Image (cartoon, rainbow over all chains, first blue to last red; front, top):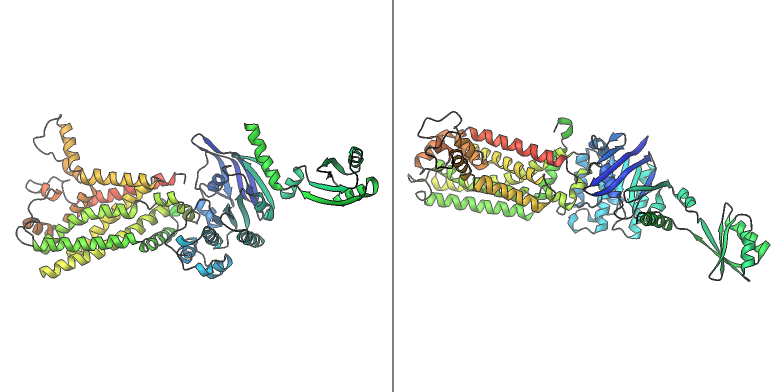
Length: 306
Length: 298
């Protein structure tokens, strides 16, 4: 069963088309990253899943329930970390969790959850005095109460330091291992890359790519790039290297030989250069970052649109 | 708001959260303090100078209750605005509504929970203030009538629930607290400050832009549309004996009870209409607020 199914979801705010006929399926049990630059329509899409916002057209089905007509059934099994939320300044962290437990109508180990998100020592302080990171942890804790089947998190790493972001990812992995589907948005590829099974990239309200991390990497054509230091370097050597089996392209860059590998390991290519062409003195490998890919996906469209 | 929409008790959690939140607020305690001081002050003024304050025959406990209606009739609307104008608009403006609606609840439950929670806040202040004020009055007059006090407090609580529903309903129609403030104050100005003039203006127009010679029967129900007039009539309706005693000592007030006296009362010009009007306001506030809130993008 699909945990989330969007069909032709469109949302227009006056003249602004925030989401443009979005089709997306998130499978049960996966960790799904929803990636896009700020203002791409991520939060609007999530707001539609949670029935904060009503779509202009299309349907959103979450855990088998229509998000608009049966929102309460959706949220009964969904933990949410919304975007642009505000905590209740005058209530303590513990009050927030007690409220979540009561309204969800579940038994929950509040101490355990507080420990898990590492705000146990601040539990009896008013949330108005919490740092952004602590609020983020508090709301994650509220989301975790009641062991949801689906976690929907809008920019979960906001306000967290690198350590906090790593702890957040660990919690997401643990929840996922328990069988929970995780759907989270981010504008930073690095965070998505670290945990996600699959990724969707959205830009200007439109879906531009849906794939696994590996799939995206393959699609990104650059793959891995080798920089090889050789004793002598001229056009003839470049031509010889380019002719080797499995070499995609070869060129001179900053006095080094720049080689991309196709379908063969970089060691095979290095070995071939060393034995068949010229002695290798040193080399380095640069993995094409998905960040580059993300930037390209989202910028290309802008150029096309412009 | 069907039963399944409201869900089993999630509005209770919302109301409890809201009350818990408000109890931490200095504004609530300031409100209680102000009302206690006003209540004691008005009781003291009435008992010390009943001749100046509408009881030429001397201070009585019944007169005190009717004098106190003047205070609560003004305090409740203003306090309801203070307590309620941000209730939903404020949560929408800040974004805490997203935290609330991320939970397995519904907008209907949130709305009802807010009305109940804020009503409890206001009721708490009122009960404390009224019991202190009337208690002081009872001690000064050496007279206490339990049943009328209970009825009066109960009607006042109903009135505060209606006003809170109106203000929370107004708050539910918008995501901006400044707009909510404007609407709530506008409601107060139209229905409390200027409402006496409204039927007269209508009458003037109906009479062909001439000064009317007599006040026709339909004017009274229109004056009763003001929630505080309806509140006054409701007290009169439920405490008729007390009203008579108070009226005997009271130099005429511009209320429905007096309008009906003298001539044989037409069927609709009875104080009971006040209870009906309060009920209609409650329903109207809940319906309008809920439908606006339900269809809003947050």
